[in-house]
Image (tube, helix red, strand yellow):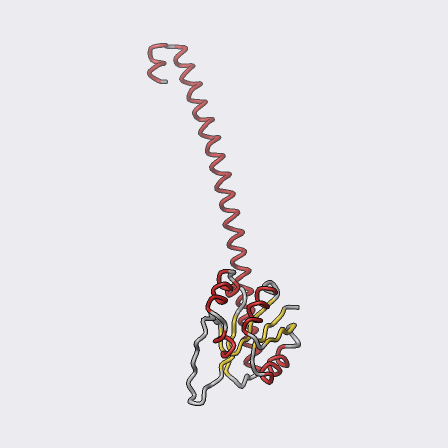
Length: 181
């Protein structure tokens, strides 16, 4: 079973998200930005997505985000930021964390399920397609190498044949044979 990483400072939001997704994913929960980094690295092959509140996303150091990006985790793990409106209704995003989608609080279970399902399917399809393209590129490169080897063999055979013909002609007529060679 794939894992879903939920990082939210609100125990209530964590519980709501847990109830929405527990039937489909093994849930990893944290309230710490440092723990987000550690869990993403530790379970990088198993995490289907990261649901993170904007307050925790804002606290993740730029260096940690750069490390995760260097590990190419954001290419295989979609990040969904759960936004909270400020008192004035203005959203302030200070995070360096690249995200794939956003959810508003309070989270609508139907919308959250559909969007996360679509997002994880998209990422899975993207990874599969990239793997297929890489496999095809390897096959093409191998076929290209084989064709070059065959071309070298053909060139060698052609040169040997021309040498043989020129020797036959030279043997028959020394004067015109050197010219032909």
